[in-house]
Length: 443
Image (cartoon, helix red, strand yellow):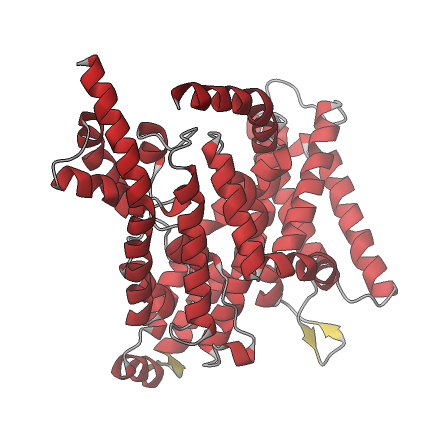
């Protein structure tokens, strides 16, 4: 077994690792990941206010609705706060994606991000007064999740143009005596002018051709085909398999696979948030089963591979005094982080990476979670995720309740954890026995 494992590991290191490493280092993917991560604090804060506004106690929601400050109810204020944080994720991502992409080319990320934000505003349609005259302001629908695809496209494009001009020394250079902040501003003038001019041309072209706006066009071109993958059970299972396989060879699978899927999941999360605020969150009104909380809080409990079940198996073996010395040491180092969905100690300490003994349950456990959660929400046994983005470090049972405003969400998580333990237990027990044998030989 050891020789065969070594042979497989050597083949993986030679043939798979270089490809996985190249994908993991792909600059646009890194930029998209960093840009969306920059928006996550606002998304989580906005979700917190949404939880407060929609907490499932009738007396509380009635209090928020009926209590007003100068004619504005507390509920309306909380909605405004949620829209002003959660609802501008697209705008923040436009800045963050350009910032990260430009930084990777050793250029000024802040200037690139500011230019990208300006470009994003230029192509975004204004609120229209009377249907024809532009009014001051922009609709939240395009500044939020619906604007993510435009943010990705324009963030990468504007940052690429910016770095190309700077790295080809097509810029206005100021004397060394000029403060750095001022010098960077002048350096950004030429690439910024080009980017903003192109954005103006795009806006003019869409207006002249009566194509609507760039947001809707990109949504129709990209979002619907990707949605067939991101909003289906088969597509979700495919992404889970890829995440697990990448992690198996030591590449952060979530950074590679979920970076491409997160815009879809966040968009569907935001759609559920809007439906929830209108009291129409169900499948009949277009509610989505698969959302970011579905993935984070119901599928990947404990982290990639749903490894909370795995570390609880280790804890069980220690409790029964059947654990190897290695697992006795690892138990407290993996269980506590695992409860908060942090599994790097498990991945590299147990280890799971390149461990053929655990690859099967590492793939099957999260797939099982996805299937049971999908079925439970499809049949109405558990409410759909309400649009609240729960921090991924929130422990299970608590996160299930907050994500669905229902104790049924917590019960579903508990059921999935129990089955995950049963999936991992025979494989972990076999691995533990081999570790004991190896330790006895060395001892």
